[in-house]
Length: 101
Image (cartoon, rainbow, N blue to C red; front, side, top):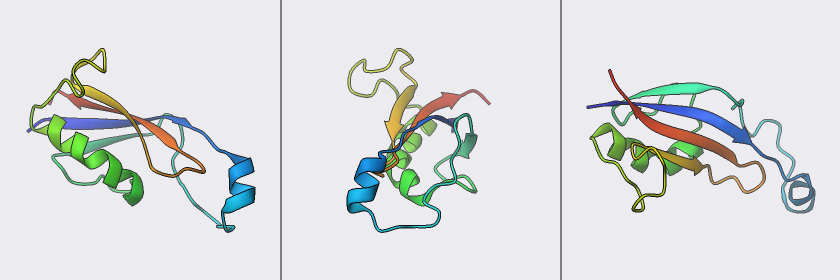
């Protein structure tokens, strides 16, 4: 089984939507751009957001088992995917890629 690296590529926020629709919360996300996580198989890395994991885990599982080429040529690197979590107020974009070793 291959290891899979998840890298936080971008964090975006939509303050206008937050002000209009979101109930105030103290801490919604602990991710920072450039953070990396290594997945051993299909287990969620320690400290990785559970909500984001629910979005990314099917892709991690596929890459860990040698799958590639999502959506028929979507990514230049067939052994990767660019995905975002499902937080509509502050989406985090991740690069998910199979690595050797």
